[in-house]
Structures are given as C-alpha cells and as structure tokens.
Image 1: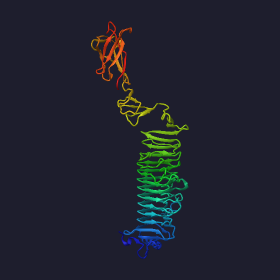
Image 2: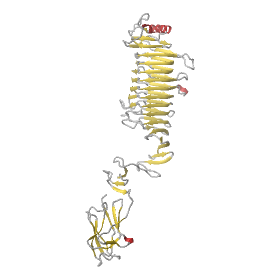
Image 3: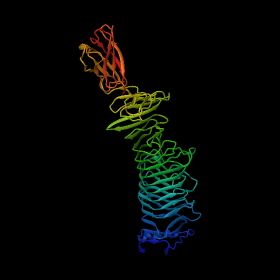
Image 4: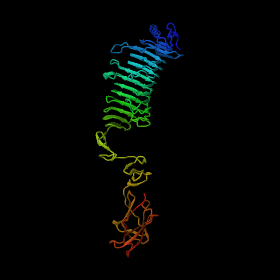
Length: 564
C-alpha cells in the first residue's frame, strides 16, 4: 500500500478525473504529470475507465499503476484517433536527452477500434511495461524507436483493428541509425489478430541497429494469414521457452510464416515449441530465411508440426549457416530444410536434410573432423551424394543406391526391420559374424543360409576305426564343411573288414537322413564298393565290395548337404 504523499491519484482533488469512460481525463493526467515532476513523486494511480481525449506527453521518471482495489482501463475519447501516451527523447544522432524510467503496470489499454497507438516511445531508456493488456488499436499497439535496456513483462496483445495490415502490434524500430537493443520480453502473449505480432526493423542502412532482443516464455497464438514475427536487418535475436501456436489461413493466401527472417543474422530458437498445426489447409513452413541471412540455430524440442504439408524450415538458395542441434517434433523430422540450393547447413549430432529444388550442402563435425556433404539432383532424376567434393554415392529409381568407388559398408547386427535387400533377397550378419541370405524376409538371426562364414574352410583328418588305415600319406581320409552347409569327404582307406564302421562324422557334419554312396574299390576303377552314412550317429560304414580283396583300397569322393 502506498502512502498518500508518495503517489498522485487522478480521481482525488485537485485533479478530479471522472474515469467514467465518457468525460475526457486528459487534463487531469497532464496536471498530475506536472505536479509529479515538481514534487518528485514518481507514481500516478489510475482507476476506472480513464478516457484520453488528446495525446499525453511523458518526460520521464514516472510510473502509471492501477488502483490496488479497482481495475484501470485506458481508452480514447470518442473521435480521438491518435496515440494515447507519447514519450519522445533524443538518442545520440539527434541529442542525448533520453526519456527514462517510465513504467505502466497492471493497466488495460484499448483503442476501441479507432485509436492509433497505446504507447509511442522514442529515445527511451529503462522503459517497463508490466502485466498490461493492449487490444483493438488500428496502428502499432506499442512502438519503440531508439529504445534500449527496457522490459515488457507478462503483457498481452490481442484483437487488432484497422485496415493497414502492414503495421505490427509491436514495432521495434531503428530510428535514424541509432540502436534499439537490450529489449526483454518475458511471459508475454499475442493472440487473435491479422497482422504481424512483432516487427524488428533496422531500416535501409544494413547496420543491424536493432539487436540483442530477447523473448523468454512468450506465446503467439491464433494469428490470421500473417507472419508471427518479422525480422529485418536484425542481429542476435533470441527465443527461449517460447510457444508458436495455430496459424490460421489457407494455402492460397499470401505466404506467411512463424518467423520471417530478412537480411538478419544470429537468430536463435532454444527449447521452444512450434505447434504448427493449422486451422485450414495452410502449407507454409514455420521459418523462412532469405539468402542474405546467416547463422540461425534451433536447439531443443521444436514441438508438433502435425498437419503441415510443407517441411517446417525453408531457406532461400545460397543461405549460409543453419544450425540444428537435437531438434525434434511429433510428425515430421524437425531438422528438414527445403529450397536450400547451395546452402550450408550444420547438424549435430546427425544428418537429415532434404533439398526439394536444388543441391543442399550439409556440414557436419564429428570428433574434430569436418565433413561437407552435398546432395545434388541431376537432370535424369538421380541424386548425386558428395562428400568433401568427391562423388560418394548416387541414388536413382533403378539401383536405389549405387556406390561409384570403394564399395558399400554396412555395419551392425541383426535387425529385422533394417536389412540389406537386393531384389527379393535379404542379407544380414548374424550374431557370430556369418553373412546370411534368404529369398523371403527372415524370421530370425539364424534363418536363411550362410553365404560367407566367419570360420575358415578346414579339412579334418578322420579317425579310422576297426582296423581301417589311411591308404597312404597323400590319400588320408578327411572331411570338411563349407558356408553353404555342404560336407565333403575325400581320401582312401585300406585294411579293416566289410560291414564295419570306417570312421565317425561329428555333429554338424551328419546328414538328416541316412545316405548311401557307390565308390571305387581298386586303383584302376574296375571294382565298386557301397558306403552308408548313418544319420543317427554319423558312422560311415563299408557295406559291401566287389573286389576279391574288398578292403585293400576303398576311395571316398562324397558330397552331401546337412542342415544349418
């Protein structure tokens, strides 16, 4: 609660403002400002429906606050179409008499659809707008021209009026080459209007005199057929913990964007959400930047681009320095970029860019090594993929992906949803590093056949049983198995006896059913012998022989398949 001598209440004598929404309260406010300056009182209390019939000029060092008990609404008197409050100082190029320490707190400003502006401040310093509401003005609700080190805190801007759709609700302007900077918007909301919410304009000199503007925990919602935010020749504009929600319009409308960047640099959107689903069939991207702009970054969750039929970010051909760091959303990958011919895009820690119309250059840094990728559509409809200026791969409708040199490298283990496919064949590496293949989609890691084994092709010496011996050193009886599960047996035996087991095949080399073979029974191939491989135990048995000396020489040239 303020003491009486600390404040001026415009309803108290000698001011006697009516605040009834009809009578002009301007004379009372003007006199209160004069007395406040003379007495060194810095706070003027407003209450009721304060009516402004002529522009109120403020010279600084004063604050307007609503009565603690009743609300305060400030509105124009019928027929007055100008600005309600104006503070006009000089800043650098025109002089140094800046207006400073001006505040408005907990007040509703309404233009009643015919007043131009609520506030116009030029050459201002330490301006504070706190917990105020602005609505239904025909021009800019709040116009800052050469204003610095100021705050707009927890304010609401909605329901625009008038026919000049080029005027934003909030204008931050450059003046005559002087700066507008260090303006902090915190917890503000813009809603229900058909012209830009905010325009930051550095004018034609390209000196980026509007800079260091910060938006923290702000929200833009239900904006009709217009850009949310327009940035002209600005620098170091930061959005953190903000929400951009529900643009309203049709794809046949003039293009409009959430953030429209012209000839600006160092634009940073951090940990913010863009609910770029629309009422209507709007298909314009959330952000558009021209080629004169540089260094735009997204970091954190960008939210839900759910029904947008266009990709969320579009940059003009030749744009330099779009930085995407962990940007995700619910429908489409948020880190997709369109119309980015010959642009440079930095993405950490992943690559995911699409150029709809021409080549996209993507720079990527990993472990202090820098890569520059280019995706270049070709006249024949194919897509060349370059790495550091060298053709790395080509994609077209026939081959899908062709590697010109060096081959293709696929790493990783079994993943049923991500396998190399050539025609109807599927290839993958199983858990023990064997390359497998199957004509139809495999059901498991061990499905299909091994086309390249992790194990080398090895011959094993057979251990002969029942008196059988190897015929000589060059014809030892041996067995082996290849990657296609084909078992080979070679060599020759001597001695032993008929109907006896010559040797035993271990598990993995045994057929699933008994196998019978006819083989050579002498060195000249005149006589024959019969062999059986018992599937139950792997025994290789000499069943019969036609040679008068049947076991003197038995040749083994046997091949058969086993299950994998």
